[in-house]
Length: 233
Image (cartoon, rainbow, N blue to C red):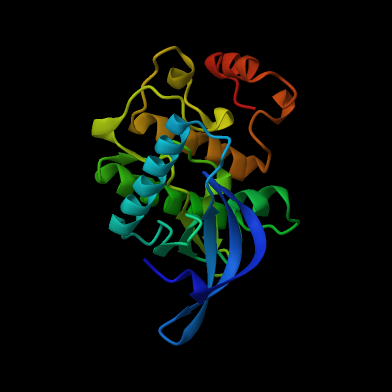
């Protein structure tokens, strides 16, 4: 584990599963490196079961990211814990932000070829996960990060990742990107669920519209019904 005192936090740049994400400066081997830090604090309002599950998922994310090695998977440099049991996960910094922010919070644009290239990189990252018997379960544009002047895309936020051999029917993910079979009672996560989310992301990238935006004021159960009916917007 790395020393928390070597990390100087900057501004908050987003949220990940179980924590907030900040820009930061990390002193490593006498060098200063710009990084992203996910900060995960204990919540006194959580039940004992919630605390146990949270810790299990955090350790799962750290363990998986330490094993992954792919140009389209975000790099975890290390993790640390302070005396208050706050966990700091140290990641490479996405200098161009998330794909979501580019599509919906920016006036910048890229060519059709660039968009296809993004999706090809996303597909390669997903294929790498699936070839390692792993599914992400929460693929969405907020979890796709851009690097190198918008030329490189990497998959991030692995707090929901599971090995296929351990998958159960727990309800995980973001409803607007969720496969229809998961909406049905006792639906099971498979690689196909990631592929469905990939399709929604592809539509979002090409249209530059948020999925199901016209249903944003609906109850989640109503959106689930639309998913089952095959509505894609």
